[in-house]
Image 1 (spheres, one colour):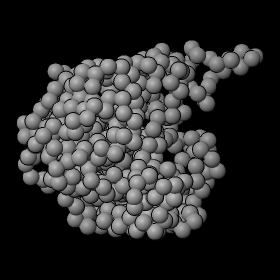
Image 2 (cartoon, helix red, strand yellow):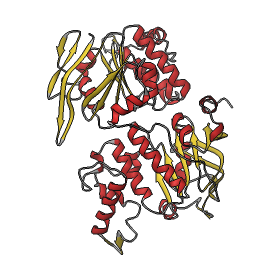
Image 3 (spheres, rainbow, N blue to C red):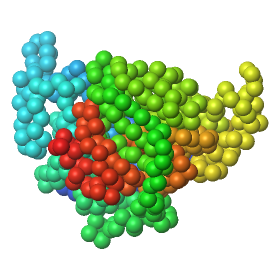
Image 4 (cartoon, rainbow, N blue to C red):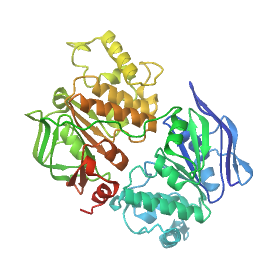
Length: 501
C-alpha cells in the first residue's frame, strides 16, 4: 500500500475534527474523498501535508511510519498539495512560479538556473500532457491552465502522492473533462491521487475508490461502479437528500430589475462588463452562467451599489439606482448573497447575532437613534438560527468559527429575514456539501414563490440547469445568449460558456 492514514485523531478547542480516521490508497489509485463542510477533510489533508501534527495515529508511506514537522518534510516525502485557491505569484512566468522555493542554481553566486528549470517544466508538461507554455505570465493564463501550473509545481518537486482540493471549483465543463484526463494520466504513470470534492457526479466519474467522511469519522466507502449519487449523499449527511431542485413553473410578473447597456471596470481599470442589458421579473429565477472572470463579479457589484459604472443604467422597482449606495439599494428590498462569504458576507470576528443585523442595525426594532436594542437583536438572531437551521453553539459564537455551510446559512438568514423584492445571489452554494446546497436552493425557490425576482450567478452548470427559469450566459463581459429553462441542456449552455455561440 502506497499511503495509509491510520487512526488519525486531531482535536481543537471544543472540536474533535478527526476521530480515529483510517484511509488508504495504492500507487496509481485515485481516491475520492467526500464529506460535508466541517467533516474533517481539510484537517486530515493538512495533517498529511505537514501543516498540522495529529494528536494520535500514524502516516504510513510504503510501509514506513512518517512524522512531518512542517510542509517541507511532507514535500520531501513526495506529498504535493494543490489548494482550491491557487498559490501562484501573478507577475511570475510559469517557470518562475513552478520553481519558486525549489530553484536549481548555478555558478558561485548560486543564481537561478532558468535554463535547467525551463527544460524540467517542458519535460513534465509533455510527459503528463499538461500543455503549458513555460514562458507565459501567470496573470495572463486562464484559470484551467493555472491549475495545471499548480499540478506542475507538485510534479516538479517529485510528488508522487498528489492531493487535489476541490480541483474543478473554477473550471468550465470542458476544462473539467481535460482535468479528469490529466488525473487519469497521472494515475497511469503511478501517481497516487487524492481527489477532494463535494460534486457527486465527478467523484463517481474519476475515482477508483470513494471514502466518505461525516463529523470527523469515516462514514463509509464505495466503489464508483456500485455507488449512486443518492447513496453517497446519504453517507455524507446521514439522511436522504433531495438531489433535484423541486419547484413549480415560474409565474413572471412585473419587471423588478432592469439593466440597460451597462459598462463597468474592474479594480485594475479594465473594462469587464461591456454593454450588458438584462430584465428580471418578479416570480422568476434568472441564472447567470459563465466561467469565473467574465464580468459576473463586477456586474453583481454594480447592481448592489458596491461598484461604480462607466455608463448605462440600473433600475430596481422603478427607481434609478445607477449611482446609489449599497445601503440605498438594500433599503429598496434587495437581498445580496456575495460570492465570498468571508470577505464580503460576514465579519468573522463578530458574533452570529451581530452578523445577523449588519444591513438592518440602523432600523427598528434593532436600534432607536444611536442605541442598539440588544433584546431585539438576540431575539431576531435566535429566530434566524432556528428557521434557517444554522448549527452554532450559540448566537454569541464568532461567525468565523462556523463551517462554510453554516456561515452561508447565516448570510442567507440575514438577507431573507426581511421583506425582499430582489435577490442577487453570487455563487450561493460554492464549496458547500449536498445537504447545505439542498437547503439553500429550497430557500431561494421560496423567495421566488413569494414574489421576489431572483438573480443567481453560478459557475456550476448543474446548479444553473436545476434552478434557472431562464439562463443567461456571460462570456467576455457580454451576455452571449439567453436560454429558457426547459430548453437548456448541459451541452448548449456549456458551449456558450466556452465561447461557442
